[in-house]
Length: 517
Image (cartoon, rainbow, N blue to C red; front, side):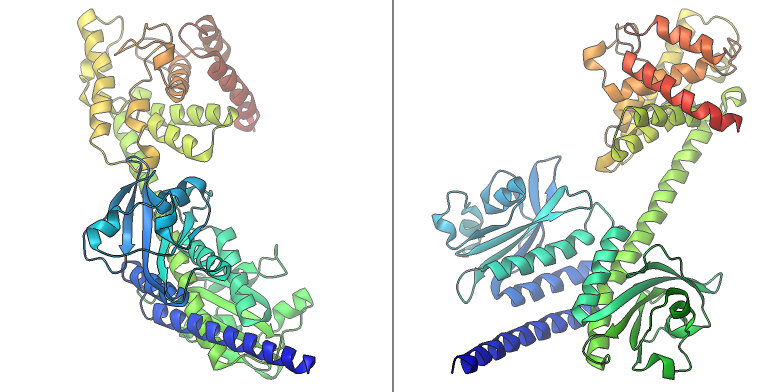
């Protein structure tokens, strides 16, 4: 009798699991039909609401400048974008604590903010909120689900929404997923389909090849395959998924990888990864299903899941293209400054090189180093408005000419303030325009003292002086490295920050062997 009860309980569990898998598969099929993220987001939110049996769902994103959360998507609301203060409500609590918030009855919680209910006439009861993080584990928003129809949100619901939040994190609005994230997603595919191994291949049409970006259990191998050989190549060429029930009995199967690795492929399933426009990015391949062979249902499931991965990869490509484009624009801007005077050509890029080197020696993080690099490249951009005759004058400047030269700092800030920088680079105009300020207040144009000069600006200041001293100018011949460091040492602590000067020396010692070799 006991065994019968256990069997019945297990059947009920499997039935529930089967229903859940059907829901997930149905959700994947729905999402697979829509690849535009702005259109897909409402679908994703509604599908997960259905999976959680919730009345409504909302995606809030952070606006750190205003210290507010705003609605990227709000199910059941026809109103415009909603803004709420970070400190308010259960959503704010979720962001501030960076933890799941699960409340059975909202009006009993001291953190609940009833303002939106009052505005909309909706009555909130149970609430489940999950934080969304970027790749650096910095919080960028939260998911909120309201009023579970069958009672209250459970621990199982928390696990579901956490997984969904991870998916949103991979497509977030500030960071792009890296290969570490992609590997996690691929392994999730493998576990969903209950198979032994999985691999991701990128397509290179120019070379007629596909190359492994990730191969489960044989990481470190660089697998390079001819596009015209094997199942992966065939899928990449035809853009159609393929199921192989018995690999060694199929003439299309290429055994070379098995021969290299010692692994025996029994059955496999391979589907293409496509961009929004239908361009093939690569293929994803899963091998050796543990409980039989792959089915058309597995094919549909993998296609649905791979739509997420395709979106992530396309975003990564677009992000890299935008990054390269941004860098090329910066280089063109810096070159336009150098074009003013052939004698100082390369000044901006060398100042940026020294600035980045100093910051690296001081242990700055990647984002701050990127900001410093941009600010250093553009620090002299205001010289575009400087009179050429004064800029190239040999000999001592008159007081009036010197005042004109000093205006390039003001011009730099005014010009850069008109440019639209992302949040990461918001401080560029300020930092770029402070490179002539000195700790003792003897600099220009504001005559700031140490307490008012940002440390990052002090780095650019030292890099700028060092580059100017060691290269040819209209008003002096280049000094030796030792002479330049001697001048910096004389003014260390009065004009220049001692920590920055020390870091420059350390950096320069490192690059001398490289420049000689």
